[in-house]
Length: 273
Image 1 (cartoon, rainbow, N blue to C red):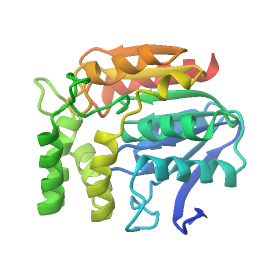
Image 2 (image 1 turned 45 degrees about the horizontal axis):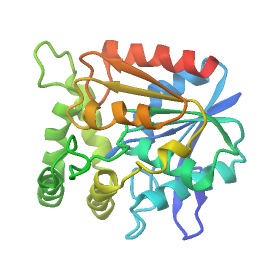
Image 3 (image 1 turned 180 degrees about the vertical axis):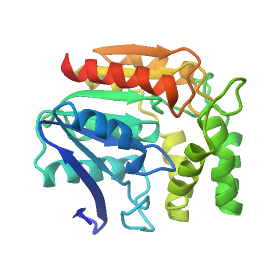
Image 4 (image 1 turned 30 degrees about the vertical axis):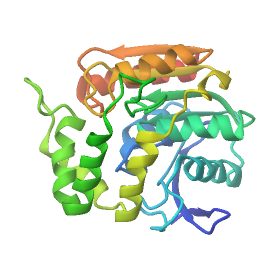
């Protein structure tokens, strides 16, 4: 398997399809790089080089005990870009991966990056605080941790339902898609899955977003039950200097079906613009 080794000895698995300007994908929790397969095939078929890695402790990367925080996630992404000598890239991050992309840009700069896409991304801050009343209460994240610790197999099955909006009237989410979510979730190490909850929910990106001056497409469903639009994409778009906000009416957190087709079209347009 193709891997790179980080400075703290973690092997990060990646896949690399096609040729052309690189489009580098960062996945959400509790998934891995396979979550981006449809978009990787799409962009690689349209003259781009598609790259996706598995976050540490996720999928085929090292199942390590330490380093499950946004700084390490960003540094791991930097290690992939540096090892492959990626230039003029477009970074694409979903959910936790959007936090990873944001922290990469503020921590490592834009010398290798020309644009970014944040899809259903966790910035600026998921947690409800006095200054972020639209956020989600800490008790909800405590419940997530309890579910992961007690019976993560059943928890992933349950989480797939709101993740894809399968609990909404008229939903056409297939059992196969929900099973794929479960399969990827079962490849996450327990410690990495548990610690990542704090990373995606309590990391505050508010101060760093205004410093990101490259064009950013902020894409978000307005029926996102995992990362609500009002607390995330809507605020992020206002904080970024060069943001374009795309809101998909009725779309859930994990895009599929017609919602995915709409995002794919917007993604290609943004890559070409």
